[in-house]
Length: 230
Image (cartoon, rainbow, N blue to C red; front, side):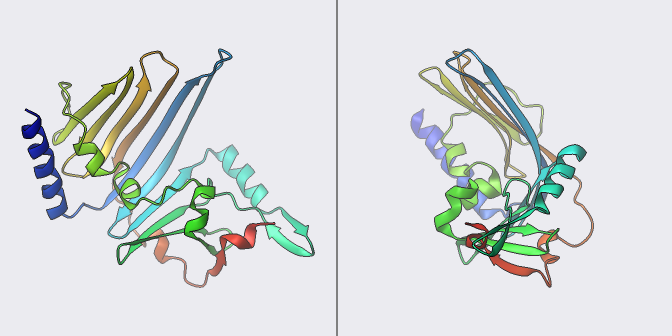
């Protein structure tokens, strides 16, 4: 049985490798809940827009109008340190652009407000909460990890998508993987004790017309992440 599952997973991986992943425009919703040792339950939720094209992943936080106005106001604030002017760099509210060139990952942020492209060196990936994985960016979850999770008995009502599930020591993970679109539609993890729960939901959108955002940076100044440090 184990050999059969391994062979099936390998066949799935090879089939995906032979079939180019389709272009996708997505809305991605994130939710998390944590119960602290003090008995406090903390919840967070937010949405992002994601564009996936060959060699490119664009991620942009969806901000409510009030939050967007606050972020814009903060972005205009400048402070002086040792006679140099620095502007605030917030990687959460500035769109992230992940590029794959010659099998090498490159990360930059595109600030349309100040017409800047900010390059992030590998040594600073952790500072902007980027794990450096192209597969995690492109598929939301590395397909090799997905195929290692056993198929679930849970039925899917989405054609071409199948649930996979694993549980160990009271901690579970469930993934709804769309084999045609080659994307994780739902990622769930948590523990049976209820101390934490995380869920990611992906909704494909109609592709927006017009020029892709990373092709609209002509004339933007080129900045380094170090330019925003004290």
